[in-house]
Image (cartoon, rainbow, N blue to C red):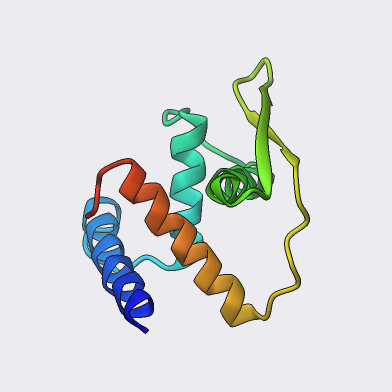
Length: 118
């Protein structure tokens, strides 16, 4: 139970931090945060992205976020600078709420590693 409370506290701190920085305080949702992580991982901040590119950015983020959990491994970076990952272990079948908790845990861990939250 304590772990769940810590995750909740860190998640709220993270949402507030990112929302203030990127959305003028308007609360960003999980998908928006995943998109921003994908953008960060790609490192191309000066481009306009098409819808398919935005989905690819979210995929990059999800792979990067779940890499420490053993589900993906960085494989290579293509000639345009896009990172590619390979599947190491298939994700377990999770209910929607369980998926959300897993992604929040992964995002919190990502920002702890980047030392943006404590």
